[in-house]
Length: 630
Ligand code: SF4
Ligand code: SF4
Image (tube, rainbow, N blue to C red):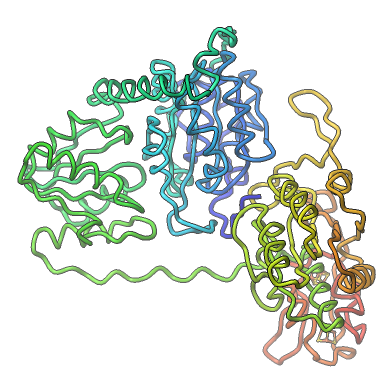
């Protein structure tokens, strides 16, 4: 799973309109940006969608999984972003409008087909939605995906509001079909997770153009001889596109008073600019760009000529600013440009109105005001009843018993990366999806030491399988612990390929990971119940004594799934007379339901207790002071 350490509004929990209402034209409903994108797809004949879930893009898939069948479109959770991209691209070549969604780091995984598909062109319209995560609320980096549009020479549109999230889908499909190019549809956290009123249109069933794929082979076979011709065509397409769309509804100039100060902005930053100019009461002109690759020349040059001083307000890199400065130089204008390059705006983290206000104050000679830093986020933790808590508690204990506390622990992307924090401290490295095994094997090969790698079930299918095959072939000395909680938990409990399911009306028999692991050459494989601390302790201890590579699957269903199916579980409490106050349950096992009162006594908060019973195990409470509430 692409992790989401901090969860913003969970749209499915806060849904305000019913399914029937969603079909009614003219209705105005509250929607998240991501829900509005899904609605836009359903209103524009999207026939095929695929995704690998990742915050902040996940709700597009969650919405289509639930509602997509109303138009008869096909939707799937793919094994990773590259596969999602390729399957959607194939559907587009065949003649169905298609789309693929991912978080920013997911586009790194899908970048290989993305960049080349811009050369080959598409069959029916194709939208590539990518959601960036400025401030890294739920991500390992803050990359600016707009760079991919530049790198690939792909057109890019950026909505600012949920209404635009929906409406720009139509324009993106039209651009894609007119120029036969996949369109990068870029949002960021505040647009994807912003909720506001959206006016609905009718749902539209997909139409399959039934393209003759074979007739496209001179374009779609990306041999160098074809790619060389395609590159020239691509550059011509992008140039024509910039001219055609300069004054389209994607871009507009807004005038607030009579001024020769301008702001150029796009996406989420537009909303922050809007707040800033009304807070300051300043007269200013705003060029709002919805097409950000190519930057529409005509309207941008007109704006440059109309203003003496311009602020470029954008999140992350000076992407717009670099281009606007180039236009200014080409025109030989004296317009002052300010932004990130001259440090009027910071390069990191989300945009906010205070950053815009300070830059405007600086431009107009006013004193800047101090911007308070955001409050540090509270420390995330495993849920009460989480099987991962039990696994990490036991693995750490087993390493201690075996005298191997110095073992390097290589972790991966998912809920289990929370093991980085106290008291577990079970993550020394975490790089990207599937890397726990490959980075771990590199360390093992270089140091000659046994390494323990942790990886989740969804991440194992995403990119752990290739890493495992490589680690076996390399002869790495590793214990790999797969934490199998039967779901892609944090992004919204999406399915993994391991589970039996009904997929688009057909029965799908899950692909068990045991078979894959054995096929990769692992002979030493043990499956253990995550809640069986005794077996887990013994198994980890045994495996740590061996050389070579072995795998333990620690299997225990995600506490959140479990809670849905077993609502009435027993609750546990601490018997004060038996409790020795050794604090092992609270300090080392660290279930959030176990708390301390003002007298220093420990108690279990029944509203939080999941009833997993782990704390009652002698491995956690040696004094048997924790029992089921009678
Ligand atoms: S582990 Fe048992 S004895 Fe120790 S503090 Fe917790 S409840 Fe009390
Ligand atoms: S039974 Fe114990 S470990 Fe499980 S959720 Fe309740 S307090 Fe936490």
